[in-house]
Image 1 (cartoon, rainbow, N blue to C red):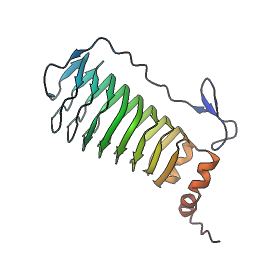
Image 2 (image 1 turned 30 degrees about the horizontal axis):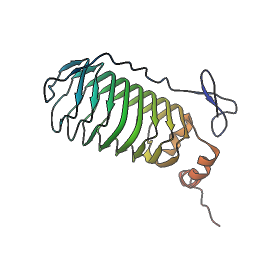
Image 3 (image 1 turned 90 degrees about the vertical axis):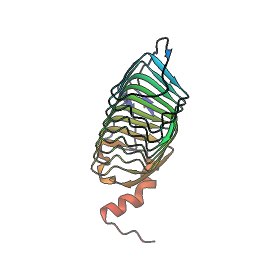
Length: 234
């Protein structure tokens, strides 16, 4: 693969010679941060230039809050309600939790690093210039979400649901994508070639805006044959 000024080119998918537009990564430069003075979150709270470190935020309600130039480090988010929350120019590191509610949240210019999350509800969310690096996320619900300039890097995604979502300039780099569902999704400049594991449980017919490698095409052959109604016999 050869990186160009507009993205990556190469074979394995798409039109011969067509370029894949690469994702624009966030450039997050946090200012000097103040420790978060409280132990919890408030609905519609305004957090600017603070660090929330090693806090147990399980079950709390931060819906509608705004985090600007913030760092969340080592926090527990079990059943934490963050619906409609905005994370802007922030770094989220070592978050853990089950059932975190990020429905219709906005993440813009965000780095999510080494997360251990399960059953995260992010349907209808907007992700723009986001890097998700390391960690493992099980059963991520991104139905009807909008992802633009998003990079999944060196992470494990188990049964992510992209149903009805729009993905534009999204890259999967050195990550495992297991039983992903792209049903009714819209893809444009989605680069799957860097995925070390690629499993698709649904929506294989929606991959026209993605590029895959020749090896991945062979791996997906049984799924493609089933989608086309082709019977393969020895």
